[in-house]
Length: 547
Image (cartoon, rainbow, N blue to C red; front, side, top):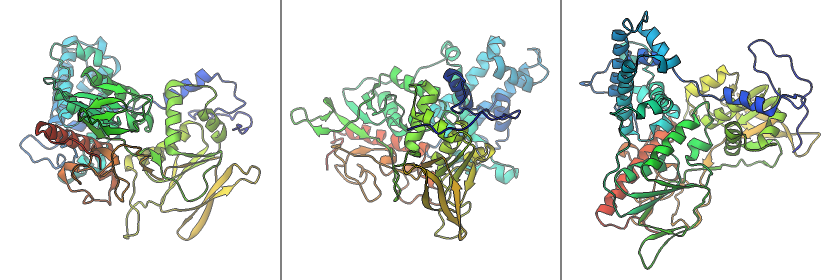
């Protein structure tokens, strides 16, 4: 693919992001350095976290509406209690440490914690570590998932602050994400304390278990089974473990160091990771009675392969300037994180979109991730065309599948979201039959055309080929699992029916799709399958079967 010329460099106004085009002689290293800065995750600061916690009106004796709204039943009240105690510590310490206020002290912690009194820092670390342990009991991989948890539709939706104070809910999601970031960024200091404990592994058992897939459900199941002493091996087809967390979510939403931190903790527990391996065959070994997974024998296996194949539209997609969200996000993530090769697919994309329009077709968070990434790659204007509606008014309306906080972040960056739009067709380029020049859609009875140098489809995902994994699927493109049919394999996550807080499948509120399809429901699914498998092995039952 040849890069399109973008003309001479543009004059950049103060405060405006510079753009790179083909005529730009800026070194690649400098350009990628700027990209890394633009892709950095923005953390909430400690003073804001403490102030946010003090908005919480629940105490330990209350019934907490936030807790049953969480798929993993996290004890939000106790987490906020630890953060309140951090504020109290700052209130009683700022004067003797030479600060004018507790806020000034907490800001100093954010800026340079190493220069502060070590006794104060140890007390503060202990409080945040206690919060970390509370969260981890509910979600053992929360460090890797908290920044993308749809908390606004879950725990925050039942917050009492809305009712009692008439204010917006306590920002639980950002508080938990802050604690995750604290544990990662201050890990060296934390592990040096005498009270720090590594993840406990119980007495080793003889059983070995294979987990196929290392997304949130697979990692959760692997952690819980390893904690019980099972020998666990996790397979993943990608070069790095982490599944959708590592490959499909950009850094500005989920820092990759958090995922690597989580994977390292799992490795320290004795979990074995085999990457760059697509499991194609699982068969019963006649002599041993065990399961042969790519030449290695296991007592049981769990399928947590997710949905990684993009859904295809009905029209032609084989154009040079059309991509799918899975490919686009994976390539840009590798380019920004590692700068793997030159030239790359991303360099071509940068050349195409520099200063020009780009269109994303689809309405989920993945569509917004693509749009915000295109903005960072230098696109002039970015449009998201979706048939989702802002507010569902008829039974035929499709409710929004994107989180409002993510939509608001995209709008602040200049992304235009066109709701209630029905995609009609791609407009062919007159000068090049292998390119498209725009997109047509209909809204409110009116047809509109947007010129576009690049189009990305983000219209959903499905499971890839199951090969010989001993599984059948239902009408919803989901693996039929052990809870639904006796003898079916153990499966977890998006690839199968998820039992969220023991609720029956298909009885979830589908007016809010994120109640069902999100990283936390995947974690809940991983927890359930780990408990079921442990029970089956303890009772001597056949752990999995081939239909």
